[in-house]
Structure formats: structure tokens, C-alpha cells
Image 1 (cartoon, chains in turn red, yellow):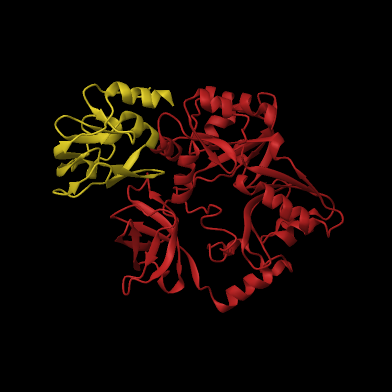
Image 2 (cartoon, chains in turn brown, cyan):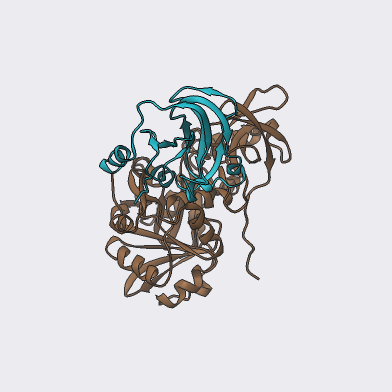
Length: 364
Length: 122
């Protein structure tokens, strides 16, 4: 199992450690998931997400290459801009979902899920074999990543950052900066549904920067709360809402597919799926009797036939009731419909609700 | 550091049984589970054998079975856990009790010392 530059720190701070995506990661600290979750919603928290992978894609055809391998359109990004995108197989199934940053005219950074680093690397280098003018590098091992999330993230980070006007850094934009003399790429992105930042930095300076944030009052949050936060905000998690067998269209990510950019991997299959009409899709559920967990069957209330499956579920710390995402037959994917979820042999009513379950009040 | 309580009988699955027949999970168990958010209580008047799965404890991130530490009849359940499952975290040996067995027949259970050794030994 692999460590991050902060593994030792987590152990020294009473974190419960668990394997995630091949890394030993903090699931929660002594205060527990509920308090960590609440802290991010009302104040701020910091996460070690150094397990995420970072690839650099450089060369004169790097933008064109990325347009070919992902469904969104990285080539039109401005320098310093970021983009969320699925990456698909030719049959429309999802290889992974990524963030792509344009760092320069011919230089991009692709951020991949920890559990998919190897698979994505093989996939991307495989496709790139047919391309001249594209150079790939896996910088995952030398890169740390700290997420600082919550309504107070900007005010905590601002006095610590040099050479970057944090207040003017827009959502889904990134800029180089200095924190305590360490070079950091500050990105206004996150996976919690709150305002916040992700700091990409060399692994050597990850611990000192983390400690600087801690000394300024930021408290650590584990992957347990990261999961409940992202679920409330209805952000997909690979191998749950997206997978080899679930297309971005089924996951409700149509906004990240750019049909007009020309051909790309998966385009034909996705277009066919779209033209014929989806047969199933991810919906949000609210339950009041029990907690739906991944893998639990979803049934029709009329004939009790299985019409889908829960992909993620928990009791929402913010809302106080159980929420879930489920992949269900399209006939049942209507907001307001009542379905059944089987929990340990008993069937509980679940209402299809609008998502996100939680949306922050926006500034101004 | 997990807290252990004298005078209780313990199972290797981290349940405790009092001489009066009350059953709960240990401090070590509640700490390992994390924040408890839902408890599925057993039905009253159920006859159970030692080791029967009688209920479920759900934390934010996990679902765990609750086993009866001994044979007997379930005569009472802690209804307060419906509204406040967090009592299991806050007071695992007191307010966080889960059910009560009548005519409990404790067999092959661990003493407080043996249980402490079991937990701290690993």
C-alpha cells in the first residue's frame, strides 16, 4: 500500500487509516465524520488528496490529443483554466472522470482518480502511440495535493498566499503562487459543494504547507466526510455513478460532452445512446425508513420488479435524512416518483428527488 | 484509549452483557464504527441463541450486524436510539444500551480483563 507525503502526520493526529485506491488514507480523525462534515459546510476543512494522480500532457498537438480522448473540449481552455471531463472507451463506457488544466499553450495537467492511475496511464499512452507531437508524463509520485474547502477557505488562505490575487481567482481557474516560499498551483476547485481551493505542490513541500495551514487554524477532514460532502452535492464517484459500464449520459453528465468539436473516443456510441434515448439513468433518492447503501436493489412499487440499483447512499449529515443515488430504468426516473429500496430483505419507500441534495447559498 | 468496564461479560464481537441482561457494544466498538447514525433494533419477545444476528448498527460509512452475546428472550429495546443513535457513541455502557435479555444464559463470554487483553493485544 502506498503512502502520501502526509501519512505520518495523519497517524500522529489520531486518524483512522484505511486503504483507498491503493493508498493508505485517513478516513476520519478523532472528532468524527459528522463534525468534520459540518465544519466544511459552515467554516472550512483541509483534506489530503495526494493520492490523486497527475499526468502532464505536452507538445504542440496536446490540446488536439486531449480533445480526442475526453468528451469535453480542453483545447479551448484559456491558460490557467480548468475543466471537468469524463474519458470514455469507444463503446461509451467510462474510463475515468478527470480534471484538465491548461497550464500553457502546449502544456496540460490531467488529474485522475487514485484507483485509476495505472489504468488511465495505459489507456492514454496507448492512444498517444498513434500521435506525434504529444508527450505524456506521470507526475503522480512527485506531486502532493491539499484541498481546502468551505466558506472560510478564502479568508484563511489569503494572507498565506503570495504572488496571487486569491479574491480574483475564479471558479475552475488556477494560478501559480507561493505559500511560505513553496511553489504551489492554487486552483479554485473542489469536491464538496463548497467554495474552496485545491493546492498542487511538489511532494517535498506538501507537509510544510499542510502544517502552515494547520497553524492558521485549518483542521483536517478525512475521506469519510469527503464522500458525504460530495454525495450531498451530487458529485459522481468513479465506480459508483460512473464506471466501465455506466456512460456519462447515464450519469447525467451530458453537459461535459461536446458533440460539435469533431470526432472523439466514444462519440458514436454516446451519440447513438442519446438519439435512441437513455434506457436508465442516475437519480437522487430520499428515504425516511432506512439508509440505502451501494448495491441495494431498487424496485417498482407496482410489481416489485427490480428496476435499478443504489450506487451511493448515506444519511445526509446536513439534511438529517437518508439520501442516495441510484441507477434506475428510465420509466422510473421521474422526480416525485415513489420507488422501493430493499434494505436487508425489507422494502422501504424512496422518493425520486431533484439533485443536488444540497446547494450552497452563492455569494452576492 | 478504549474504556473497559468491570463487571460486564464481553464477546469477541465487541458486545457486552450485564448481569441484569442488558446488552450493548463496547467503547472500542463504537470508536471503530465512528458516528452511529441508525440502529435497527430487534423485535421484543424474540427468543435468541448466542451469536444470532439480532440487529444492525449503521455508522456514516458502514453497516454492521449486532449479535446477541447469549441465549435468552429479548424483553426490552432502547427506544431512545431511534431518535438519538449517537447515544451509542456518547455512553456505550450506559444510555447507549441496545436491548435487554431475560433469562440470559451467558456461556463462554470474556471477563473484563480477558476482553481488554483481546483488544489491546491486537
